[in-house]
Image 1 (spheres, rainbow, N blue to C red):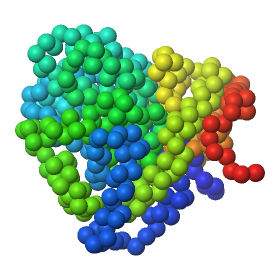
Image 2 (image 1 turned 60 degrees about the vertical axis):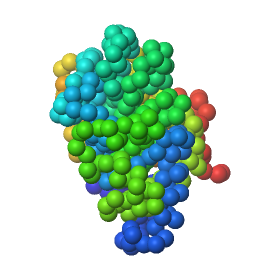
Image 3 (image 1 turned 90 degrees about the vertical axis):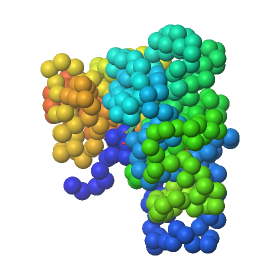
Image 4 (image 1 turned 60 degrees about the horizontal axis):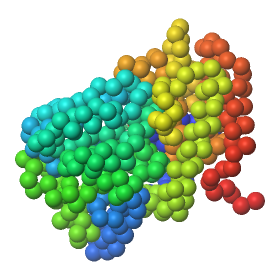
Length: 396
Ligand SMILES: Cc1ncc(COP(=O)(O)O)c(C=O)c1O
């Protein structure tokens, strides 16, 4: 089909031309004498994206799932108790991984569309007088449902109760897009992947680790090799990696970090909020329902939209893809057929969001979902024009 494909899934995201160009380089010697001159500042600047000063950020070849595994395998012991919650496909998959690692998982199942269950977490932590719970898991942004949870509130709760458990946060669809403060929020392990907020191809698991979590690495009895923090610390200290790094991706990551820091982490979060609000206005104008049940959890990186009884969300997705070259996210697991998802994160502006909304309208018209043509696009246009753009615009 002629023209660009509109990539409106919640990762991989659109890749800036500058990042693509930064990776248009000959393959290189990752043991070259001057390689550390490239890697040392890269690792230092990555900390600014995670907003940690005292923590360390590791780059593993892999994806977010590998990042989860690194968190578990480096810091916990077989049979350790962890407190978790599942309220969507990704929060559930991390729980599943904990179970496969033989951990004693106290999981709180929550209705999909809601966020981290604060009351249940408090009750479990309060009851845990012997501090048997070694880690508390939270999915910051549940990509399957478009729900963002309050990580600071979980940290405050742990502090309030004087509970020493490590705080593990899945930041795969939030780091580099939403407000994310590893240091201030006392996050012990923050997991990200290259293909979302970093606007890169998939291929890197990027993991921020606090000194408290790092101190556990030599006490853990779970087998760890490829994702070893210890091996990475030793090699990174000299500017190298314990095995062949994805050097070409690292060149792209350099450009990604430069772009993120140039825009500013606060500006990025504000831009995502602005773009997301336009999408939410469109959903209301269509007369459809956001899968996220309460505005306190509205995600600024992805919106999952319920099509309502009598319609199959997969028809919207297939029609958008085949007829209009628009890629939308599908409903995962129990949400299959019930929702389609619009990803609105990464290298994105208002026009790109309007393009996706227009594609959704055409697909919904084709499958017979009732709405007034242009209602969603119009609502977003009204919102974007009435509200100041918290983003850099090209000089006039
Ligand atoms: C919130 C969240 N966590 C974890 C993952 C898994 O990451 P990956 O697919 O990079 O392994 C994803 C993937 O989309 C995600 O959205």
